[in-house]
Length: 573
Image (cartoon, rainbow, N blue to C red; front, side):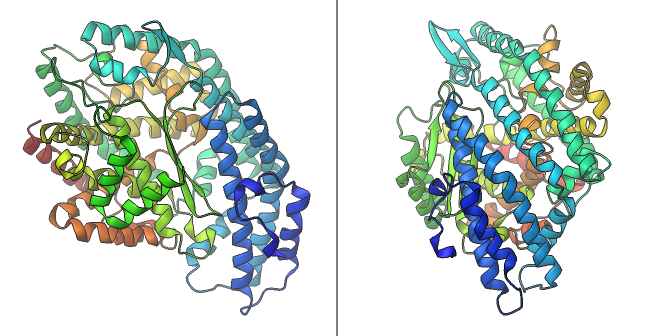
C-alpha cells in the first residue's frame, strides 16, 4: 500500500489523519524478523519523510509571510490534527522495533536515539508540543511586525542594518535608538509570552518524570556525548581565553575610531556579535553593488568544490531559496529539509550587506549536509545532532573565504576581501562570549524556573552575564536596552537550549579551517566525507572524520584564538 503515498510533502500536507493512519496501522500489524526488517524500516522511513516535509513546508509558509493568516491556520491545523496523532503512532512503532530485539548493522546510533525518544515519550505532552509551536509562531509575528519610519518610509529593523553601516556617528546613534525604542515597545508582550512558555516547558519535564526542563531537553536533543557540566566548563574556558581577546578587539577599534569608549552604535548592528564599524571615510562592504548575489555565490561554491557548486545551482534552479528581507517576514535565517524530495530550503533576510554573504555561506553549508547525507537509506539515519550540523555550516563560511575576491570569482577587490575575512574572524572571537551569555541564561532559567517566571529577574540575570562576558562597550544610560537583550534572541523563545552547539561547532570549524590552510583539497574531502555520515556516528567521531576534535577545554580554545589573532595580524587588522 505504500506505493500509493504521494511523492512530496505538499500533497501530503493536505491529507487528513484518517487517510494517513492506515499506513501506520499497516506497519504496526506486520510481524518483524531479520528477513523483513529493512523493508519495514524503508516504509516507516517513507512515511516519516513525508510527515517531516509537510511540517517543514507549512512552517516555511508562515515564516515567509507572518501576516498570512491562512498559512498560519493550515500550519496549526496540521500540528493539531495530524502531527499530534502521528507522534503517538510513531511511538508505537519505536516500541515495536525495540521490543523485537533486532539490531541491524549500521543502525546503532539510530537505535540509541530511538531508545532515548521512547523513554521520554508521554502522550500527555503531545498537545503541549503543539501549543509550544504556536507560541513560537506568535514570537515570529511580534518580531516580524517591528518596523520604524526612516527617511519617510516604513522600514524593517533588519533593513536599517545597511543604513547603520554607512551613516556618520550622529546618525548611527539616532538609528540605533530608534530601533531600540521600537523593540522596547514589545517588552510587555514578550514578557507575557515568556511567562506562557516557561511553565509549559516545565510541565513537559514533569510529565516525562524529569527533575527539570534542562534534563528533559538534554535527552530530547540527544546530548549523549557531553553534560551540563561540560557546557559550564566551556563557558569558563571562554571567560578565561576569549574575553581578553574580545577586549583587545574593542580597544583596538576605539583607538582606530579615536573614541574613549565604544557605544552600541559604534557596532555594525545591535546583535552581541556585531563587529565595530569601519573608520570614517571607509566605504561599507556592499557585495551586491556590482554583482548578482546568487550567481556570484554560485561561482564561489564552485571554486570551493565543483560538486558543492552543483548542489547550490540546483537550489537556485528549483527556487529553493528565499533571500530578501521584507515587511512581515519572520526574523533570522535557517535551512530546513524537504525530506521526501531530498532537497533543502534556505530562508534568510538579505538587505545588501556583507552579513548576508556570510549568512548564505552558513546556510549553504547546512544545505550541502542535506545533499551529502541523502544517500543514507533511512530518514532516521540522516538526523544529525546540531553540534555537528553547525560544523557543516560554520566550516563553509571559512572554507569559502579565500574566494571572496573578485579575482577568485567573488564579490570584492582584494583589499575589501581581506576586510571581509578580517570581519568574519573578529565575529568568531566576539561570538563565543555572546554564546556563553545565551547558554548561561538558559541554564539558569530552566534550573530556576520559579525565579525565571519573574521577568525582572530574567533581565537581571541576562545583564549580569552580559557584563561578565561582554565587556568593552559602554552602555551607560541604556540599561533597559541591555538587560532586555534576551527577548531579542530567537532561540530562547523558539529553540530552547539550542545555542551552545554553535560555540562547540565553531571550535570544530576553526580546526577544519586550520587544516585547509595546509591542504585545502584534503580538508574539503574530509569535510564532505564527514557530512555523508549523517547521524550514523557519535558526535566525537563526526568531528574526527572532519579532521577536528570535539572539545570544551581552554587549551583547545586557546589554539583557535591564537590562530585567529595571528591571521588577523597578517591581514593587517
